[in-house]
Amino acid sequence: MFDKSFLSGEDNMSHTIANLEAHHFKYPGFRRPGDVHVHFFGTATLSFSAGVKTEVGDVFEIEADAFLFALRNRLDSAPATPVRVAAL
Image (cartoon, rainbow, N blue to C red; front, top):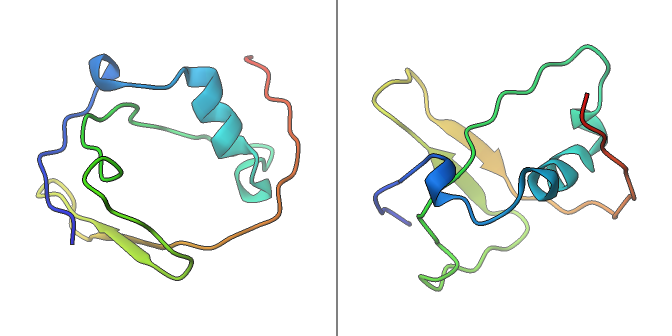
């Protein structure tokens, strides 16, 4: 379990918006016409620097007092697909 303070916001970002978009929109499920995407960019919480290593099949759970239910996502792998993302 990784349990550290979670600092969010633009001041804590380490990647450009274009880089984040490229990683997000490379998956077909995130490129459906008409969908709206809302992101909270930035964190200074680095599980990588703490030595956390992930593997396919790992389940990530995030919970916050402001939300009723925890968010759970299973890590999987998909083949790379080149995609070009353009700002509207």
